[in-house]
Image (cartoon, rainbow, N blue to C red; front, side):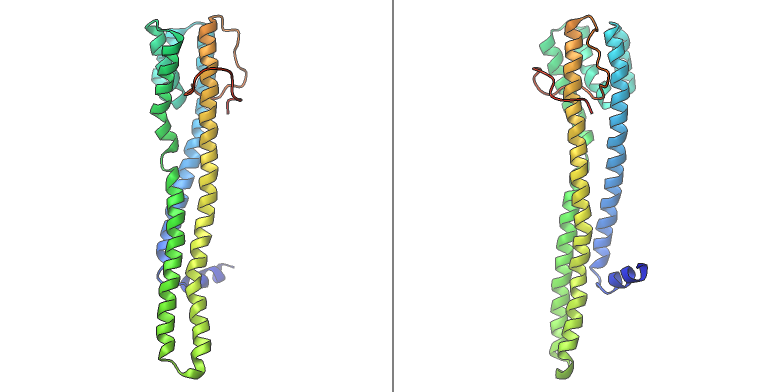
Length: 233
């Protein structure tokens, strides 16, 4: 199996190497993004539960200090709202502040994910370019070959040239799938922020701490507060 893969790579020509580089870069980006988003999900859940307990106990000063020291996306967003609360501003201003906090941390969540789609397109185009150049070289070589060997030589040359397209597609398809997976994971985290923001706002408005969520895992809302839109991821 390994020998077949190595021979397939070697017979593809020069363009197999840049495609391989693109694939390696894509895998590095995919692994880094997956680890980061998974860690953020766990950290958001942990910090939200901690902050929720503090807010429910009306320890707002402690919650504000914790949000400033934690540095997680969730703590940052809730911290924006708690700062407005410390200035005795109303629910609407607190909500706007948390929306601002969400916009502040969103680039961290979406960072580099879009590179995967670009790299997938580059891998596909490199494969096609390698095939076209290979075919041009093949027809040029066949033109000066013995007529009895032309069919065999052309067939072999085309087979080699098509290897680059195949390898380009083999590299692009997994990257597109991983890009979709990471995009879905990012959207789930953002949705959890919206639900967590609603819960925090309701808890602050209620002032009693009686609506403590058992499974909250996100950070504040970036959309107008109406009613809960789903569970916190």
